[in-house]
Length: 168
Length: 357
Image 1 (spheres, rainbow over the protein chains, first blue to last red):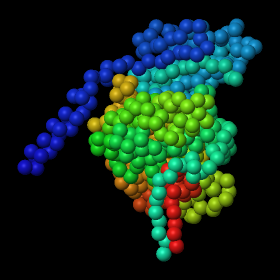
Image 2 (cartoon, rainbow over the protein chains, first blue to last red):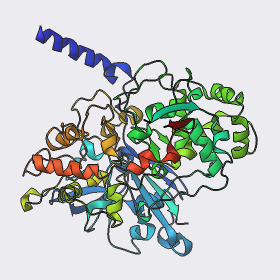
Image 3 (cartoon, helix red, strand yellow):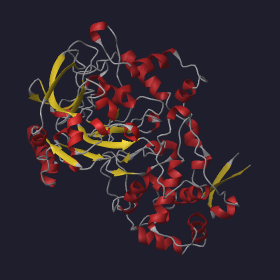
Image 4 (cartoon, rainbow over the protein chains, first blue to last red):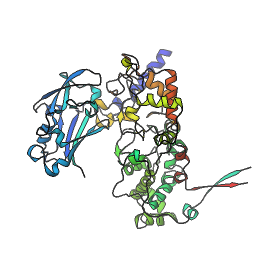
């Protein structure tokens, strides 16, 4: 009897599960939107990111171990969207920043000048691989990796959007 | 002997002149000024006055029996003591009623963050057939026939027209004033309260990340629940189930990362807002702390801030000692703001308590 009941309960639970009540939506691919003070807004999927030149950055993660992350320099992506970097990064454009948002609601900002190679050699990438493997599911499709930054707090996981703004 | 009777009176007559002008939202500096007030709905004293009447207005429901306050009770820090609330048709809601406190700082609402802004939020339970179940046009029509409301709407919006949009805006104005900032924790932060030894130890565990290799014990609660407001707008899978029934944000985004991910709620007044979690599965704070300490369930979308956080080397869950659990709960009880739940500015304005000797 006991077995029958648990079987019944399992079938019931299965019927309640979204697999049966909703259209399957799990096939969605993660993407990152580039928006705000841009000339061309972009929405990049993993396959789009692979079209850019790839950069590797090594840094320690919270586990205290060194990992090699592969991705694209943020400056490269932003320039593709027509953000004022390089020769244009002067005057009022120096009051611009990017706000990066993750699907868990976490947000961090970088000043544009922190991303520009005329200002710094420190590399900041939008990574999609860790040690040549896709990022773990819990970390989402994309993660920012900041070279040499002591705390990992701005190495934001599950990135969904990058918005360029003027400080007001 | 005291006899208490409750009489329903027209609030306007009872309270006399209605205050007007900009509403001063007062809060501690350590809450920060990242507040959210839309340009088309500034907070005014008359707007808050009207919003409070509407928050407690049962005519906004299909049966004239429920108001916002039915499932957001002040004595429960504006939450409900049921796991799922009952609406006009007595069909239980699909998720637990959330506490309404310090919404001035909230951007995304509901357990899955599906709407942005209080105005948009307030409209949802009003019209949901399993909650208050009444189209806003009907609500507007009902109130238009009332002897008091049209003049109040004129005071707030410049003319007597009552619309769903105006109803929702006034409710949102009132909700922005629900500021809870006088718990013993707030008093401690402004150096007006000396916590007990257990409260201090609980606070330390709450804030600290465990590092078993170094012998440092912690519960890391503050990673998601920290700060003066004990609220950061985050959404995580906190390991309730390996195979969840409710997929949370994934139902909206379709992303594997978002499976069973829900809002990390405010811990303010947490001792008053049982039952806990999106489905109200835990009845006590002890059960909640036990979950994080001993029962976190593995899944691909389990928050990386919970995965592997342990006080044991190689441990899967926090593994707190019974004494530590008690200390954390002592700290959680410090977050209760008794001023907030008894503040007459937030109580039902339709009721007048008459006492007789």
